[in-house]
Length: 120
Image 1 (cartoon, one colour):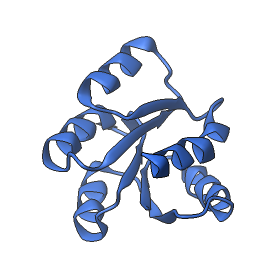
Image 2 (tube, one colour):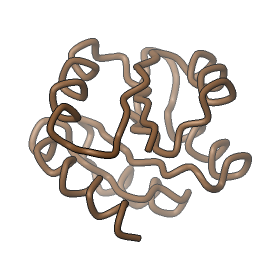
Image 3 (tube, rainbow, N blue to C red):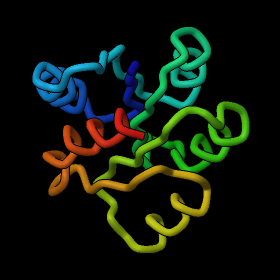
Image 4 (tube, rainbow, N blue to C red):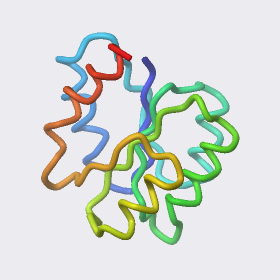
């Protein structure tokens, strides 16, 4: 399964590359930092999974989530953010996020979450 990240933290890409070394069946295609870059990359590489941050510099990832679920409903979107506020968690679920992880505390859950996706 092809994965991209939409996150303005440069360290996220390095984390994903390291995690996916040990997780068979997944290919990390890269990281983009803005919604425009995300839309371009998604149209080009057609990922199955998008890890998406809520806050991207001056942009809101929840708007991108809504757009993805409307236009690419087959794409699995997992929110990966430092803002673990219940309001954002609930809004993301309402908009169709598959899961919502706090990247400060739950990054280590990603391999198991990915493995569960291959079973469905």
